[in-house]
Image (tube, rainbow, N blue to C red; front, side, top):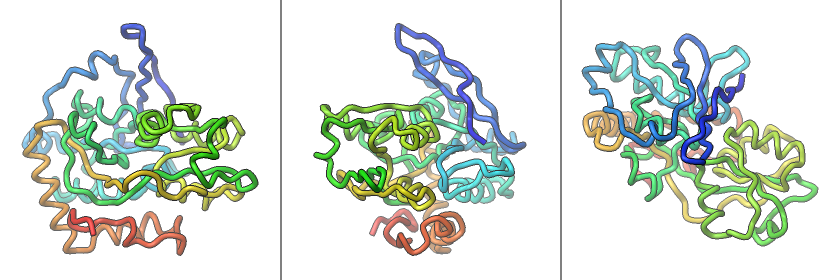
Length: 295
């Protein structure tokens, strides 16, 4: 099941598409959000308020398999989802005490600012620019940028993208990286990962770039495609994010991540959610971060 764009609002001449999610009984549905409202910070809920409500609201992807996606039975699954359920259990006593809110890459910051979610666990790469807008907890994964393309026309060097069209998803580190470092490469942008991959399948672009963990997983499931560029730029980390200044919830998450590290929790998460896709094509130790300590 894929999300549908519910609304597009015109604000100061800029069209801002904010996507709402739909899902099962544990999923909060969201309408389109005015960009001016998204830029204004609504007060984040306290832990007491979250406990009184009985549910914590966590932003995840619904179309980024195997990290956050809706399966054939309409249930949200993935590496980030597995972690989200554990946070709910540790905070509220049950892994079912979570409302999953489906977000787009470009709306992750806005949903925190507007308090639509308490936590974002949508494969959120830590960057200096994002640190100015949200507070990141300790990391739980390592990542860099990759590029996938058809095997018969595989792109193995960034220089080969000159004169070609590169597909990216709005709001991702790949979009920022190419705009900053390779402004002459033509970018074709999409709001949703599913639409971006479909554009590649349809031949509307020559290659697609996003996190290397994601393109590797996709290429393994889509024969005829290859990750010709496995790593671009400096390695980054992925971490939970909360609204700027929400120290109480941030401290809880950090303590939880340290505790989970003693259980080797994220390796278990990897085995459950990522290994079925990656198999022997990836090594858990190259991707997973335990206890918030990058090695």
